[in-house]
Image 1: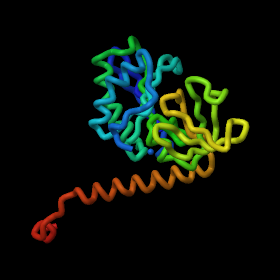
Image 2: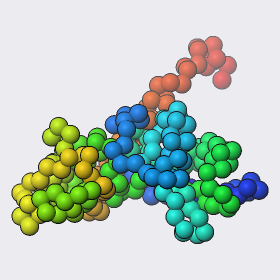
Image 3: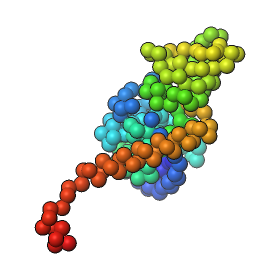
Image 4: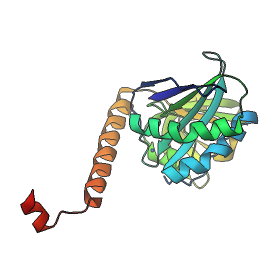
Length: 225
Protein backbone atom coordinates (compact mmCIF):
# COMPACT_ATOMS: atom_id res chain seq x y z
CA UNK A 1 0.00 0.00 0.00
CA UNK A 2 1.21 3.48 -0.68
CA UNK A 3 -0.08 7.03 -0.84
CA UNK A 4 1.95 9.34 -3.03
CA UNK A 5 1.94 13.15 -2.86
CA UNK A 6 3.86 15.15 -5.44
CA UNK A 7 5.43 18.00 -3.48
CA UNK A 8 6.88 21.15 -4.91
CA UNK A 9 7.96 24.50 -3.60
CA UNK A 10 4.77 25.88 -5.16
CA UNK A 11 2.71 23.71 -2.80
CA UNK A 12 0.92 21.50 -5.34
CA UNK A 13 -0.32 18.21 -3.87
CA UNK A 14 -1.74 15.70 -6.39
CA UNK A 15 -1.86 12.14 -5.05
CA UNK A 16 -2.29 8.49 -5.86
CA UNK A 17 -3.19 5.72 -3.45
CA UNK A 18 -2.73 2.00 -4.09
CA UNK A 19 -3.74 -0.64 -1.58
CA UNK A 20 -1.96 -3.83 -0.54
CA UNK A 21 -1.75 -5.93 2.63
CA UNK A 22 0.57 -5.84 5.60
CA UNK A 23 1.14 -6.84 9.27
CA UNK A 24 4.22 -6.66 13.25
CA UNK A 25 6.12 -4.38 19.23
CA UNK A 26 5.77 -1.02 20.62
CA UNK A 27 5.71 2.27 18.76
CA UNK A 28 8.76 3.53 20.66
CA UNK A 29 10.94 0.46 20.00
CA UNK A 30 14.15 1.56 18.27
CA UNK A 31 15.18 0.17 14.89
CA UNK A 32 18.50 -1.64 14.59
CA UNK A 33 18.83 -0.53 10.96
CA UNK A 34 19.10 3.18 10.24
CA UNK A 35 19.43 5.52 7.28
CA UNK A 36 22.37 7.71 6.31
CA UNK A 37 22.67 11.23 4.89
CA UNK A 38 19.52 13.15 4.00
CA UNK A 39 17.32 10.09 4.57
CA UNK A 40 18.57 9.91 8.17
CA UNK A 41 17.79 13.61 8.65
CA UNK A 42 14.27 13.08 7.35
CA UNK A 43 13.74 10.03 9.56
CA UNK A 44 14.76 12.07 12.63
CA UNK A 45 12.46 14.90 11.53
CA UNK A 46 9.29 12.87 10.97
CA UNK A 47 9.62 10.14 13.60
CA UNK A 48 8.31 12.20 16.58
CA UNK A 49 5.21 13.18 14.61
CA UNK A 50 4.60 9.60 13.49
CA UNK A 51 5.00 8.31 17.06
CA UNK A 52 2.56 10.94 18.36
CA UNK A 53 0.05 9.71 15.78
CA UNK A 54 0.49 6.10 16.90
CA UNK A 55 2.69 4.99 14.00
CA UNK A 56 6.35 4.03 13.70
CA UNK A 57 8.94 4.26 10.94
CA UNK A 58 10.06 1.12 9.19
CA UNK A 59 12.32 2.70 6.57
CA UNK A 60 13.02 5.99 4.77
CA UNK A 61 14.52 5.96 1.27
CA UNK A 62 15.20 8.54 -1.43
CA UNK A 63 15.32 7.32 -5.03
CA UNK A 64 15.43 8.70 -8.55
CA UNK A 65 12.20 6.95 -9.49
CA UNK A 66 9.71 9.29 -11.17
CA UNK A 67 12.13 12.17 -10.78
CA UNK A 68 12.88 12.16 -7.07
CA UNK A 69 10.81 10.01 -4.69
CA UNK A 70 10.91 10.14 -0.91
CA UNK A 71 9.41 6.95 0.48
CA UNK A 72 8.45 6.82 4.14
CA UNK A 73 7.50 3.29 5.10
CA UNK A 74 5.41 3.20 8.28
CA UNK A 75 3.07 1.00 10.29
CA UNK A 76 1.02 0.81 13.45
CA UNK A 77 2.48 -1.15 16.35
CA UNK A 78 0.27 -4.09 15.27
CA UNK A 79 1.88 -3.94 11.82
CA UNK A 80 -1.12 -2.65 9.88
CA UNK A 81 -1.55 0.47 7.75
CA UNK A 82 -4.77 1.46 5.98
CA UNK A 83 -5.43 3.84 3.10
CA UNK A 84 -6.89 6.27 5.63
CA UNK A 85 -3.71 5.99 7.72
CA UNK A 86 -1.61 6.82 4.65
CA UNK A 87 -3.74 9.90 3.98
CA UNK A 88 -3.53 11.05 7.62
CA UNK A 89 0.24 10.63 7.69
CA UNK A 90 0.62 12.49 4.42
CA UNK A 91 -1.48 15.41 5.69
CA UNK A 92 0.64 15.69 8.84
CA UNK A 93 4.06 15.22 7.26
CA UNK A 94 3.63 17.27 4.07
CA UNK A 95 3.66 20.71 5.78
CA UNK A 96 6.46 19.57 8.11
CA UNK A 97 8.65 18.53 5.20
CA UNK A 98 7.71 21.63 3.22
CA UNK A 99 8.74 23.86 6.14
CA UNK A 100 12.13 22.19 6.66
CA UNK A 101 12.76 21.62 2.93
CA UNK A 102 15.15 18.63 3.28
CA UNK A 103 15.03 17.96 -0.48
CA UNK A 104 15.31 20.91 -2.81
CA UNK A 105 12.97 21.21 -5.77
CA UNK A 106 10.08 18.99 -6.81
CA UNK A 107 9.75 15.48 -5.37
CA UNK A 108 7.13 12.83 -4.69
CA UNK A 109 6.31 11.87 -1.11
CA UNK A 110 5.28 8.23 -0.93
CA UNK A 111 3.72 6.90 2.27
CA UNK A 112 3.69 3.11 2.21
CA UNK A 113 3.19 0.05 4.36
CA UNK A 114 6.04 -2.46 4.66
CA UNK A 115 4.16 -4.96 2.48
CA UNK A 116 3.97 -8.71 2.93
CA UNK A 117 7.64 -9.47 2.19
CA UNK A 118 8.49 -6.70 4.62
CA UNK A 119 11.83 -5.44 5.88
CA UNK A 120 12.67 -6.54 9.41
CA UNK A 121 13.79 -3.38 11.17
CA UNK A 122 13.33 -4.09 14.90
CA UNK A 123 14.34 -6.94 17.18
CA UNK A 124 10.67 -7.70 17.87
CA UNK A 125 10.12 -8.33 14.13
CA UNK A 126 12.23 -11.50 14.34
CA UNK A 127 10.00 -12.77 17.15
CA UNK A 128 6.72 -11.66 15.57
CA UNK A 129 7.53 -13.43 12.30
CA UNK A 130 9.22 -16.55 13.71
CA UNK A 131 8.40 -19.61 11.61
CA UNK A 132 8.59 -17.72 8.32
CA UNK A 133 11.42 -17.63 5.81
CA UNK A 134 13.72 -14.60 5.68
CA UNK A 135 16.78 -13.27 3.88
CA UNK A 136 19.46 -11.75 6.10
CA UNK A 137 22.59 -9.92 5.02
CA UNK A 138 25.33 -9.12 7.52
CA UNK A 139 27.75 -6.20 7.59
CA UNK A 140 30.78 -8.49 7.68
CA UNK A 141 31.48 -12.17 7.09
CA UNK A 142 29.89 -14.57 9.56
CA UNK A 143 31.17 -18.10 9.17
CA UNK A 144 32.67 -17.17 5.81
CA UNK A 145 29.51 -15.64 4.29
CA UNK A 146 27.34 -12.54 4.48
CA UNK A 147 24.04 -13.72 2.98
CA UNK A 148 21.73 -16.18 4.68
CA UNK A 149 18.28 -17.51 3.84
CA UNK A 150 16.30 -19.66 6.21
CA UNK A 151 13.43 -19.95 8.69
CA UNK A 152 13.32 -17.49 11.57
CA UNK A 153 13.55 -19.13 14.99
CA UNK A 154 13.27 -15.98 17.09
CA UNK A 155 15.93 -14.40 19.30
CA UNK A 156 18.59 -15.75 21.60
CA UNK A 157 19.62 -12.79 23.71
CA UNK A 158 20.65 -10.08 21.24
CA UNK A 159 21.05 -12.47 18.30
CA UNK A 160 18.75 -13.85 15.63
CA UNK A 161 18.44 -17.62 15.31
CA UNK A 162 17.96 -18.85 11.74
CA UNK A 163 17.38 -22.40 10.52
CA UNK A 164 19.46 -22.71 7.34
CA UNK A 165 20.72 -25.42 4.94
CA UNK A 166 24.04 -27.17 5.60
CA UNK A 167 25.80 -25.12 2.91
CA UNK A 168 25.04 -21.99 4.96
CA UNK A 169 26.39 -23.44 8.18
CA UNK A 170 23.17 -25.20 9.22
CA UNK A 171 21.16 -26.61 10.70
CA UNK A 172 21.11 -23.30 12.63
CA UNK A 173 23.11 -20.09 12.70
CA UNK A 174 23.02 -17.30 15.26
CA UNK A 175 23.52 -13.78 13.93
CA UNK A 176 24.05 -10.83 16.32
CA UNK A 177 21.49 -8.11 15.61
CA UNK A 178 24.26 -5.51 15.57
CA UNK A 179 25.93 -7.41 12.73
CA UNK A 180 22.86 -7.35 10.46
CA UNK A 181 22.88 -4.90 7.54
CA UNK A 182 19.52 -5.86 6.07
CA UNK A 183 16.78 -8.42 6.65
CA UNK A 184 13.40 -9.05 5.07
CA UNK A 185 10.77 -11.76 4.81
CA UNK A 186 10.54 -14.04 1.78
CA UNK A 187 7.17 -14.05 0.01
CA UNK A 188 5.50 -17.46 0.39
CA UNK A 189 1.92 -18.71 0.30
CA UNK A 190 1.98 -19.35 4.04
CA UNK A 191 3.25 -15.81 4.71
CA UNK A 192 0.42 -14.37 2.61
CA UNK A 193 -2.17 -16.41 4.53
CA UNK A 194 -0.66 -15.52 7.90
CA UNK A 195 -0.47 -11.82 7.02
CA UNK A 196 -4.13 -11.76 5.99
CA UNK A 197 -5.12 -13.50 9.24
CA UNK A 198 -3.14 -11.02 11.31
CA UNK A 199 -4.51 -8.04 9.40
CA UNK A 200 -8.13 -9.10 9.88
CA UNK A 201 -7.53 -9.75 13.58
CA UNK A 202 -5.84 -6.37 14.13
CA UNK A 203 -8.51 -4.41 12.24
CA UNK A 204 -11.29 -6.20 14.16
CA UNK A 205 -9.57 -5.44 17.48
CA UNK A 206 -9.31 -1.74 16.59
CA UNK A 207 -12.99 -1.69 15.61
CA UNK A 208 -13.95 -3.16 19.00
CA UNK A 209 -11.83 -0.55 20.78
CA UNK A 210 -13.49 2.22 18.78
CA UNK A 211 -16.97 0.89 19.61
CA UNK A 212 -16.08 0.61 23.30
CA UNK A 213 -14.90 4.21 23.33
CA UNK A 214 -18.16 5.65 21.96
CA UNK A 215 -20.44 7.17 24.64
CA UNK A 216 -23.81 5.46 25.07
CA UNK A 217 -26.98 7.49 24.55
CA UNK A 218 -29.12 7.86 27.69
CA UNK A 219 -32.62 6.40 27.86
CA UNK A 220 -34.36 9.76 27.29
CA UNK A 221 -32.31 10.41 24.16
CA UNK A 222 -33.06 6.93 22.88
CA UNK A 223 -36.83 7.47 23.38
CA UNK A 224 -36.70 10.78 21.50
CA UNK A 225 -34.99 9.02 18.59
